[in-house]
Length: 463
Ligand SMILES: NC(=O)c1ccc[n+]([C@@H]2O[C@H](COP(=O)([O-])OP(=O)(O)OC[C@H]3O[C@@H](n4cnc5c(N)ncnc54)[C@H](O)[C@@H]3O)[C@@H](O)[C@H]2O)c1
Ligand SMILES: [Zn+2]
Image 1 (cartoon, protein in one colour):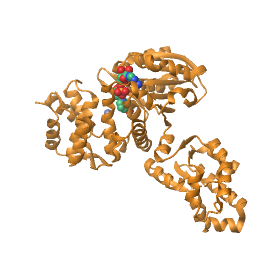
Image 2 (cartoon, helix red, strand yellow):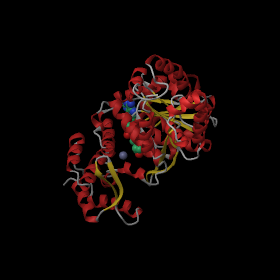
Image 3 (tube, helix red, strand yellow):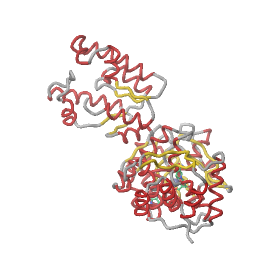
Image 4 (cartoon, protein in one colour):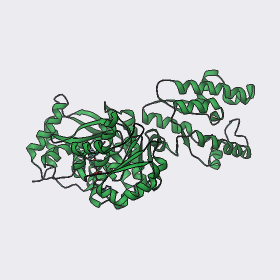
């Protein structure tokens, strides 16, 4: 009571594209009576029976929704059971004093004096904690919980408690990351750890030969899980191995790069490269949990940090807030929450997940045009410039120039244009772009005349 469940629930429902029900409101609507009246007329016991029925009905409904439970609903054992069976339950954390401040002037029957309110709060707290699958303080926190994403500085130290399930675990990392964080991860995983495996560093890990070696080395049962510790070049192929080994086992992503924490380890896209091109083989396979410890970013090289910063600026533009200015742990949390929400709304990339490609059509063209001489991050920074210029947002162009300072790419103009047009063919003869109506308001599938697109691509290329 007083935790702000209704406000939060509405925000979360909107961000996840789900329906929202506030249980108190549903009960009042159904009976045509306000809750204080119900309490006065029929007493608390009768109210709890009505509340439980309606709550369980909604929990059993087929379409996923966001429910804000009444503060006392968990006191009914049947409700607790339905929660276990049908819901991901998030405990909205709040201090009793703060909650009291919010409800003291309300007409809620159980919030009449501070002493009994606090006693009630303490009595229920245990039930809340026992029923909760996760805890959160704001909408980002609830979204992250819904996606199985845990963000916490120091999480690596108690990895064992955060990895769900009971089965044996196989830990996979590239040699570099294994050298820095392997020992700590092994200690934290303890008895459940069955084996450790090395991957080559960088894109070489995203190859069928590396994947095949992992398949051959693994000795997991169906209830086992892979733990991928590293950047996107680790989580991508390990997620793919998890999707395919024994026709699919569970996996846990522990991203250690900024790219991994704000992008690659979230959303369930896994895969590997072929000689014919990047990411041509893969599967959608959402990790059982993504465990993000922003503390490990301390050892990341400046160059790698900049790679991630380009995606952070992209995310800030999509959110409409300067996320890049936040302290690192909060920056990671906000970006991870944004990507989680978009991917939960569109898990198989049927539509709106395309917004995450802001700047990326140009970026891919530049990567091809430069034969990958420029990095993905540099290409994205340039791609954002083009997308923002075409969106008519000069102030945001300045932001990208100031924060990412992209330099025109040394690239072959014709090859870059040809690459951009290959993307175009895939989209039925039209160049489909992601643009911004304004910061925070992306639009995808936008068609523009060839000459405008070509002009903006050319501006990104040196000489
Ligand atoms: N699946 C997706 O949705 C998705 C999204 C974005 C990118 N990706 C993929 O991610 C890949 C790029 O990932 P990346 O940029 O994380 O590269 P990466 O995994 O190659 O890591 C970069 C380098 O940083 C080192 N490193 C990692 N963590 C470290 C740490 N904490 N301290 C010190 N060094 C550390 C690694 O050893 C490596 O040398 C690309 O292949 C891309 O296609 C996938
Ligand atoms: Zn990218």
